[in-house]
Image (cartoon, rainbow, N blue to C red; front, side, top):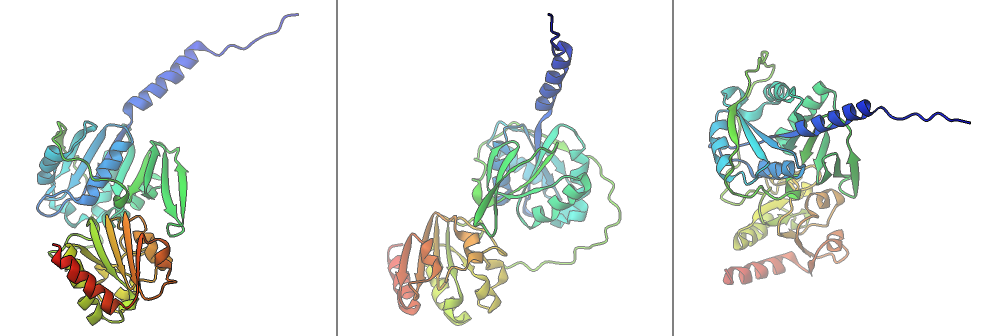
Length: 347
């Protein structure tokens, strides 16, 4: 008795392997980088570049706005990776202030190239405005606030205010990813041989929104999002006068940035740009000092990844002590001035 065996087609297998090799060869990452008005690449964007490099594909950086050319030259001298192959510059005032209605058509035009398998942005205000629009128009689901890249298709992101981590496997042709800047180091500073090219011309219809003005809070302190030391105040400080009296001198003695809980911001202790937490900024400094902060889950979501946490509170049962490395229990009006004095003497 003879039996028939079906042998896979060799030509079919070769075609499948060929398609796979072509896909791998074409895989590339487009990362959108933000810059200041004077052409300095933002710290959060350098972290986005670092994350893009972890995907293992050749990286193309995109700058937009009237300072784009200056930022591209700075990146060429500090890009720090052999994976950075190209820098695309959209040097036009149209993209100043990063209105998503203007940036989205530009990103879509570049992403038409089948070479790009990933699009990476920082999880900043700009990134959070841009990525969902790109995802909606491409009909792809974005993966937001990624804290770890497992491989080119697998990502880890926090859910439930950071109380759980979800591992997301993405099978889409194009992966749209925003990364939490505090979870990735900034790209190392060294020269790169990446080429610089101009972005394609994009037809942008009349925008239904218009940039009017901005009112920025200027400070000589380190930027809260990238500071290595942060002193943060909460509801336990009672009022703005006590906040300024205790938190500001302590921060000055350390050369630290100042932060606050939502309760402190809502009570008018400080500007809302200093809010840390689930609905504020996410920070991960080397040192985080929490003054008069009980440790609500929403606040912990914004600072629990800090390297060393010091909690100062008069309630020894406060939840903040569960995540703190060091704790001081007692009257804030006595502990903080004494701590500030001793730190000032040791400067």
